[in-house]
Length: 435
Ligand code: XLS
Ligand code: NI
Ligand code: NI
Image (cartoon, rainbow, N blue to C red; front, side, top):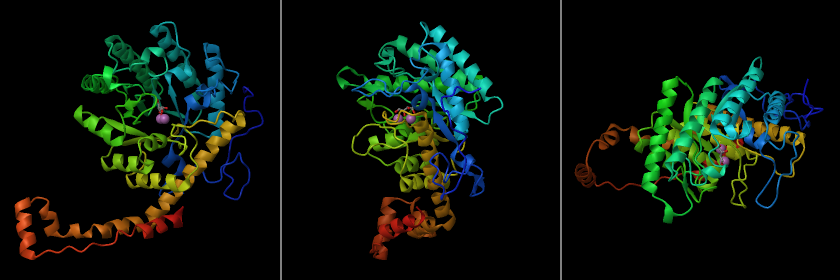
């Protein structure tokens, strides 16, 4: 028996690029092999519970527009109805994974103990549904930014009671993620930052955040959780400034607190844009350091300047992201989570399905283009050529030399370096052939 929410829809299947059926896959063919692995295994798609089922369609100027049968989300009966619909959607999309915040899946209790008991109850309910289905938990996380108690931060809160409450909250979410066999646990610090430096002791807050993350790692090992611990960079919104500003800042933070071997990054397209980068840049920064954990796929509106969390629709952009991912060996235990939501006028259940189908197709096109570029080897050859001077033994030896010896050698040889073309346009034209 189904809830009837997605009435009239059957599971989406691959119909090929020539199909005009808006509810079918045109490019995402889960079992199709790409560079020796199925598309399903490469992309590891996940549905984000918050955007698809918990978000009610409000914006800063207006209230909910969606009016789902499980709204208002304030009792366990409706939480279970929401779960029933969620799993029907996972089936319709053949989605291999999903992700949640505690606050998305259970109503807040009157006490923390009650909230935790509810989390336990709803995750048991999920697990019963997961049995017999080909679906896993990509990651769980704690929402420590919506409730008013978190307004001054969680682990960075000036009040030690909030640090304690955050520790207890994260413990409960790691427990639930572990119980469900989750592949990762994510920490996104929406309010780990400041509104004004006038009331903020930044050095102390960073030390507390570093210690908190160490406690998370210690706990993971204590209970034998095999998932990756990931932090998610974002420069601002909701805080004026967030400490996990971008990939490079996070990597520096992790090194400072001795966590570089333990914690990786969950990178999001829209957050990269907010930080003044491209998604490709953030992925390249992470992969250069072996720190890529997982990705949150979406896109921002390039005019509004907000984190609009739209579904991706730009193949060339996505192709270059997967190019760097494939080059680094793939997503591993991570995946492609659609941290994306409908526009608030897109009211119909069909919109929810179509949005994901479109996003999955865009990622599939990006993946295939990336794989074709890797197989062809054009970019890699150009790179090898550009740096080939460094293959010479004398060039390599220079890195173990010193300024004075190098200087003496340059003068003795009467060196006069001649610039070479970077061939940017030729490389851009090359990429265009594939996307
Ligand atoms: C918000 C973040 C959030 C995280 C999970 O901007 O993207 O959705 O992914 O807390
Ligand atoms: Ni985001
Ligand atoms: Ni995200």
